[in-house]
Image (tube, rainbow, N blue to C red):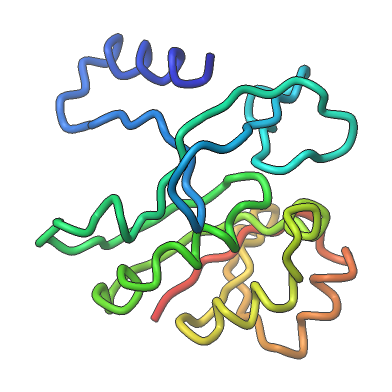
Length: 168
């Protein structure tokens, strides 16, 4: 349903520079279950989370594999993939190495990353090995630098659903 809506949006707006790919992004390629949220079209997950009962099987791809023949550079990645962000980062190590000016925006949900079987602190540490992190404070329209000292507050939920801008 989401892909159909996206396709319709591209057609209605007559976009010509968009290539639609109907795949999930993760740290492995192959078939995976996508658990479906009944009340939130943007809340589907690659791991069973809460009381999600329904799922569909979708194709998953590592970004390193998808872009292995890409000779151009990748400047920007936006990830809001419901807890699978850490897995996606693991699947794009070559992209991170090759694209030194890459910027990344990633959603961060402790509950969903934990539900995916990853430790939120490890995800933040992985990001910090590659990037400087900035908390995007949408209310005040500010970027706030994040340090390892902030991990406890972030991972203990004192900042709910933060988004991070990650720059080199």
